[in-house]
Length: 212
Image 1 (spheres, rainbow, N blue to C red):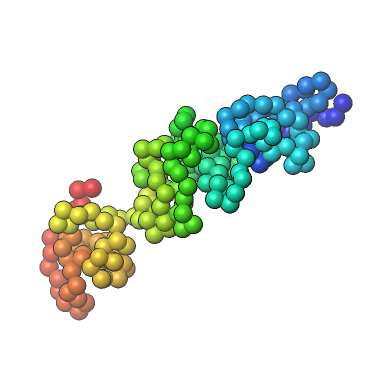
Image 2 (cartoon, rainbow, N blue to C red; image 1 turned 120 degrees about the horizontal axis):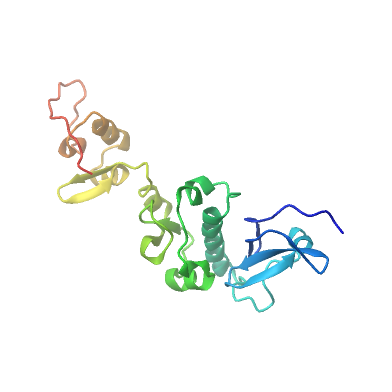
């Protein structure tokens, strides 16, 4: 018999995610796998490593049939992988800090039913970056929309509106670095967004402490 293999737990092979430790089945070492369609099956370590098995079977409902479906599927797999597998490069920013995929979205078809297909410019975005992947907290968004929804962004509230610095830059026509510098110096929201130049002037203002 071959030497007992290392566990492939957390590794992805096509549509299959290895979720268990290797075990011997009729003299062949196998791994327990979760298919994107929700089925749990066992497949031999040899077949997985050699790329012979990528789906739970010929009738697997998750098998991509066109490019449009393939994009949504790749995004779904990436979501599950970075939340579940410590081997994922971005695991520490997702599963490593407690971000999870909701039970409904463990099955790809449910994810697709809730989200639909993304456009060419869109990718998956969590509205609350500290929240889980679930229908209430996710949307399809462009790169610009996602850039305005990162944990590093500064948000400024003024005249009943709340936007990120980059969004205010587009609205008021002031360079983003200018608004950022004023914010760091403690300018109030009105002065942060003012088109008046304060360069070379003694600008008197109250130290602003944002409430949010």
